[in-house]
Length: 103
Image (cartoon, rainbow, N blue to C red; front, side, top):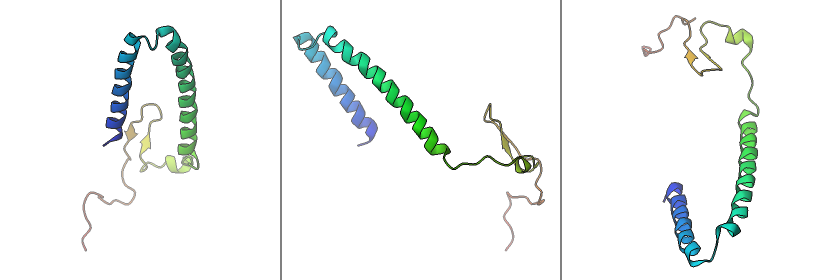
């Protein structure tokens, strides 16, 4: 069973339980509303902090490419705005990398 199936089952179970409990009078909107509002505030804060920590983990120890390397014409570059890869101009070794070398 995948995690998607698991969480879809939990969600469906909670919806089913809620549709049974509210008409029976076990819960009303006034008693549930403060919990939902607080859960949304706390959930948003937790997600923001988790995103920040993930960004730190991913970027930890990475280095920028020195300009002397990035300026070489045979090095492909990536636009920081669009993410489009600009192909390298020529090959300094004059080798066709798509062909296999003879043995």
